[in-house]
Length: 558
Image (tube, rainbow, N blue to C red; front, top):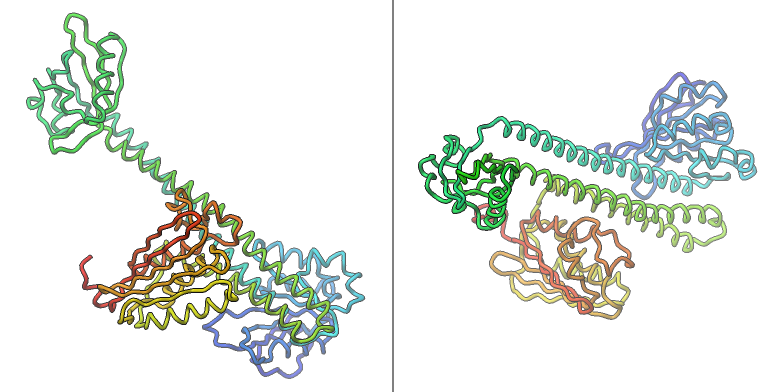
């Protein structure tokens, strides 16, 4: 396995021993990253035939492969160079697995948590012989004689699973980076608070002397810099006339405690009016002078910035808890919503493997349809997660095009109506003459498809969904009303948060992403969304979007 050369779609002439042939099945490279397939088979003819199968063009759009072939017999001691190879799928036979099973397990472990698939080609009697390595090392197997279409389908399923696994890891790493950034922000705030506290302790305090009734007899010069008043402007006035009404009673009680408990320091915090009319938080410590003078010394310092920092820390901690909860929901959702279709794919593939020779083409197509539907479901889920992530990072783009809203909505309703199987009816009504608009077609489809699908999902069979379109004052208004279960009042404030689901919808299948996607799409458009709902009666969503050309929207006053 020392020499390596690559060729294009056309197969190269027979190669000398110890050479690997890289066969590239070509589609435009800019559309998709090329997948690498490593083939370790004992027989030369099998390697050649398998290369042709994977390199040939089918009727359907296929993926680009780079196939790595070994022309030398797989033996112990020859596998060491493979440790440096990177690939997305390895196809091997029983002989290779028997010699390289430790390498296979090491490769899979090194790739974790990303899925690295291994496909075994073997005759049925060999399965029992390699059982000790099979379930620890192999993700799928094909028994000889091998059908070309079956092999290509297995390869595509395994490569698609690897791509989804890579995308999931990227999304998870992105989420972890966001958590780390939040932690760093929190640490920075805590550090800022510590520095601020040190600064306050070393700053000049306001020293004042008050009569027992609160009359100010003395204020130190620092009053000017901290509160804007000169000492002369405050002396002779009542201290509590400058205290915030909400803090007056508490500040008065602390002051009275100082009078009643000579020798004990009384500490209090309250807002004091600055000369400019703003309110400053003061931390005051009061000490009774003596019984003869009947006055109190008040040492005050401005803690307004510290209060603001504490509020920022509380907000940061709140956001951190929300992020942790969001991650928990994400992991929970992914473990269910991704695992379920993957199980369907695996089960369908195994059933097809066992019974495909006995079944008709129609029967096989039923299972192929299940596999395609499961892949579509996972793709839609990942697209929703990526759309939300882009929107939160401000990277989602708005691409408005001129669109006939009436035609667009009519086609969407027909599409959804066909999918309900006659269990629901959507009544679409247009209430204006002009339905031309400049909107992002893709984002609008996200909005209406999610809202109409939810109206159907959460409504009883046979119920009617009302869908109304009207255009007025350079805006399009979409109103979708159902006769479903309704949304509890306590759930409505969190309705558009990712992964949040209403308490009365937990037993209905869903990811909790739909309304979050809707809200993000509406925000990207610069529109508005409102909801009205009553339990047991139904829910109405109203979406308002600007529909003027982009140049006119930029000229409109904010």
